[in-house]
View 1 (cartoon, helix red, strand yellow):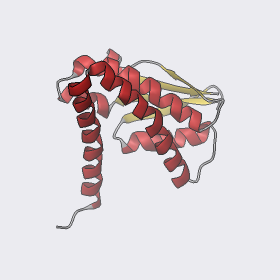
View 2 (cartoon, helix red, strand yellow; view 1 turned 90 degrees about the horizontal axis):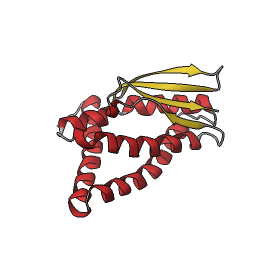
View 3 (cartoon, rainbow, N blue to C red; view 1 turned 120 degrees about the vertical axis):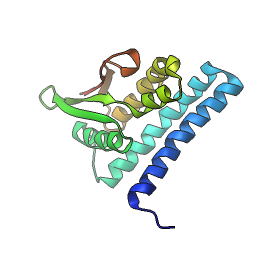
Length: 160
């Protein structure tokens, strides 16, 4: 069997998202929703460090807001988010405006929209400050609107 590069990428993307969802459901079945969410938070305190460092190394990037923006754009693209970024504060920061979140879409598709806000709050408020910290002590993260709370977009603000 000969696979195209795009088929291979899609296979691994689907496997990545499937294992995340299956892991959560199995932990939830055994220990309950709150325990599953707590363990998920623990995972998302580590995974962004791995992702950020890998993308930083692959792109031969250093520290700072510009490097963070470049790496975060790559991560969001690879995970199939629909988004745009824009500078804020005279080059001292940027915002990512997410119009479509694949993780939220998976929750909707699986009929679990009732937990989307709790999961989104826990994961995004855990993951993105870790991304900021990987690129410099002075970079702060603030979450704006959230799709999982009914907003049109998620707004991720990163500033010095």
